[in-house]
Amino acid sequence: MAPPKHRRPGFSRKAQYGLFVTYVVAIAGTMVAALLLAISVADPAGFSALRAAGAEITAPVARMFSNVRRSAQNMNATAAAYINAASQNAALQKQAKANRKKLIEAQALRVENARLRGLLKLSEDGESQVAVGRLISSTSSSTRRVATLSIGRNFGVERAQPVRGPSGLIGRVIETGPTTARILLVTDAENLVPVMRASDGLPAFSAGLGNGTVLIKPLNLGESPFKVGDVIVTSGNGGLYPPNIPFARVIKKTSDGALAIPYADPGNTPYAVVIRPYQGEARAAQQAVAPDGETKEVAE
Amino acid sequence: MKIPVTTIRLPTRPAREYESRFDREQSLLKMLAIPITSVAIASMITALPIFTEEPLLPPLGLLMFLSWRLMRPGLLPVWSGVPFGLMDDVFSGQPFGSAGLLWSLAILSIEIIDARAIWRDHIQDWLIAAVLIAGVLLGGLWIAGMAHAAPDPAVLIPQIILSILLYPLAVRICARLDSWRLAT
Image 1 (cartoon, rainbow over the protein chains, first blue to last red):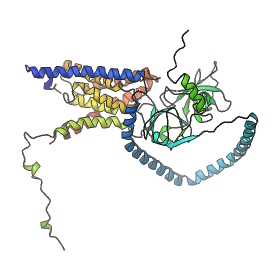
Image 2 (cartoon, chains in turn yellow, orange):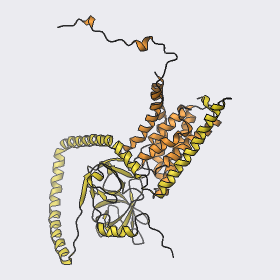
Image 3 (cartoon, chains in turn red, cyan):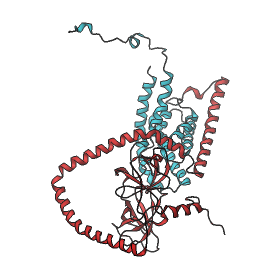
Image 4 (cartoon, one colour):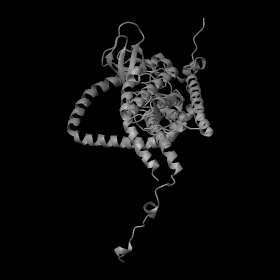
């Protein structure tokens, strides 16, 4: 296409100055944007009010589409259940029979566990729930893995509260708005989760890779002890995430750890439960000394 | 009571039929609002319940913005990358100011290209858009990496390819919106 006429203003001084001013404004605007960027890099929570406002504006539409999506999924599941009724029934009966034995064992273990706790005088408050919401959107075009929750400060959701779904850990709250909250998913590269192997409690750390998988790194050095199919649960270290929340399943062994897929799929989780930080007081005391992300290097 | 068919008459609309279509007044609101709204809505699409495991949804706001700029040069002013980009930042999850800077640099580089390569066809525009999309996405990853821990750049490859392939569709949508914009 031919260039438009405005690029050649001719002899008109007014047009020439007008054209010049647009370039000056463009360069100045770029510098302002760079300045805003520098501020938000230095203080990542700085513009959270603006983002919360944006999430609030789009939340009604997102909620509507989320409802539509959920009812469509329910319809699919109902229809599929009718079609598979006979084979599913047989499979479930077989499964129920196998589970019965394990259930009795688990009950015995629970009794024994309570008795041992009583002996140790170990009091431990269980997972206390703050509120239940739904994930209504995610940053699917950015490299950051952040999802929006359908509830916010109106339900008592606060920053740094863990969020879990029925199948496993989803992430933690990083920003709150009046009726929405933003959740840093466990697959984000910034989200480090203390975890352990469910079978023997082998301690490890999980870091997101930004592509739907997480990297599990054991604390002890040496060859990777993981096997494909290992179940990873949260360990409760650090006092943020409560222990024993199902976390991920190992799919590949690497030289110094393992690749795993989180159990909770943000796109397919019917609800998300916001829970209180595990050992909240201890964590608050620790945060007062060295807040997350602001720990300074210790000088000699 | 039965109404005879002959008495029912549709109201005629003489305005379009008999008024001269030369030298007609166009609605200024429509002319300005359509490009601005289309880019804004495209930026907000990420707020819908779309869940992807890796960044896969193309940056639709950027696609619309580049399409308007390349398809209709002179419509969007040189400085428009900053406001459009800052609006995109509110929804994208990137550090605030990242798209404001990158989109502005993109439109400035198109301005430089405009001065060199004057007569271009669609394929050349597509090539320019492809380079700019890849640049903006990689730049966004680099900026996100300054503020937070960032993943490996390889996670962006599917998104870059998808965005480049979607550019012609974005141009088509812009062209349709443009003909609607310029109709009286």
